[in-house]
Length: 424
Ligand SMILES: *[C@@H]1O[C@H](CO)[C@@H](O)[C@H](O)[C@H]1NC(C)=O
Ligand SMILES: *[C@@H]1O[C@H](CO)[C@@H](O)[C@H](O)[C@H]1NC(C)=O
Ligand SMILES: *[C@@H]1O[C@H](CO)[C@@H](O)[C@H](O)[C@H]1NC(C)=O
Ligand SMILES: *[C@@H]1O[C@H](CO)[C@@H](O)[C@H](O)[C@H]1NC(C)=O
Ligand SMILES: *[C@@H]1O[C@H](CO)[C@@H](O)[C@H](O)[C@H]1NC(C)=O
Image 1 (cartoon, rainbow, N blue to C red):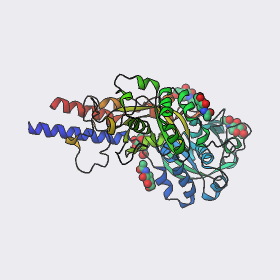
Image 2 (spheres, helix red, strand yellow; image 1 turned 90 degrees about the vertical axis):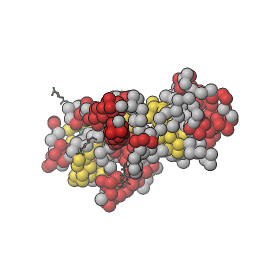
Image 3 (spheres, rainbow, N blue to C red; image 1 turned 180 degrees about the vertical axis):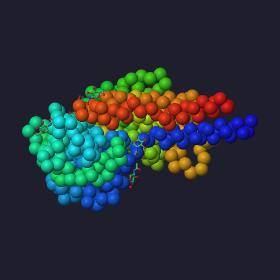
Image 4 (cartoon, rainbow, N blue to C red; image 1 turned 90 degrees about the horizontal axis):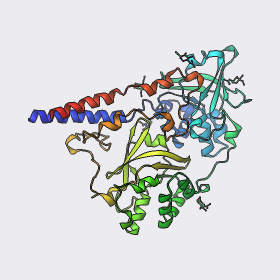
């Protein structure tokens, strides 16, 4: 009896550990890779400042074209952060390219998709890079826009983790006038309520206006703001408490709970491990939520309910707007709600588990489903438009291998949970 109980606890604990460790799939850390190379410190610094490092770390097949501080300064000295970010996105290829592969391009020339293509801001071929094996063993890179020069040359390999990440150096930035000269919109240029209404969040937008919270958002926007806007369906959910009963102050807190005073793009959400503090946080409570990543999907856990990040409305440094499919209910206001979400189960939280904030599979029945559901197809990714649209050349390579990969930790997790249910 007792032995059975502790065995069951052990199995649940093991399952929890697997659940937590398989939630974050990043197998590489671009910041750490470049840290050992002071000659790329500017490039590395800007990958962190633009949060592109997080995006790169969530990609399983990626090539980073790095530039030395000297080569990169021509970009950083003349342009605002939003433009530097777009240029950097052109230097992140969504395929694996190492020295061997560069010298073995069929027909000697190909186009590779870049991270810039996934932003949805890239018309035509703007989001692609032309890689051409040139005479004399040189490999040239340039924009895929017709007529662009192949002005950047491959100089050397920096780091390879086959077929996850390759870091190679090129001698000069891939510059595209259309990217460099694109107007850099300030956050204040956006009509927040207009964007929310267009994205199907009319109820949320009208609450922001009637409560005056829109002014708080507008003020915060230029310094960094991420809004999680519940769609109109979310406000019609049967499970939603009667929000009209809230006091004015509580309504303000509820709305402010849907925003974070920091630019937090999707890649950053996917990799964040600590609870995220919202605009509602003040002396009166924590007003934070935690995130859970499964494949390409991110779920926010408030402690009362859970909500999926459904789409990206705006991702433009320093402003991000996502839609979510449920109203986020902070524990500070709705802690006594009828069906609180399971918190970390005390029985299986042992010693110093650093990830103990992560949702634990304390409810055997509900835990496996999010982990076992296969990663959403790239097209539905809130991270951006045509996520991993492969080029002709990458179709048969590693890029497509990821999607079909069997989730071994998830299968093991299922087996452990089944066993523990059987034993109980
Ligand atoms: C490549 O990434 C996959 C998935 O993230 C990981 O399982 C694998 O261990 C990585 N390969 C190497 C060599 O690190
Ligand atoms: C990546 O490496 C940097 C520098 O070593 C470190 O500060 C950061 O926490 C790491 N990121 C992750 C997600 O482990
Ligand atoms: C890449 O650019 C070169 C030079 O402009 C061009 O000849 C070649 O066709 C381009 N490659 C592709 C795949 O478009
Ligand atoms: C913002 O958009 C809304 C809805 O489209 C519109 O009613 C409002 O006038 C716009 N505000 C500004 C300042 O343009
Ligand atoms: C991909 O592989 C299939 C079968 O192996 C082959 O018929 C097809 O031509 C390949 N496509 C490319 C783009 O290499």
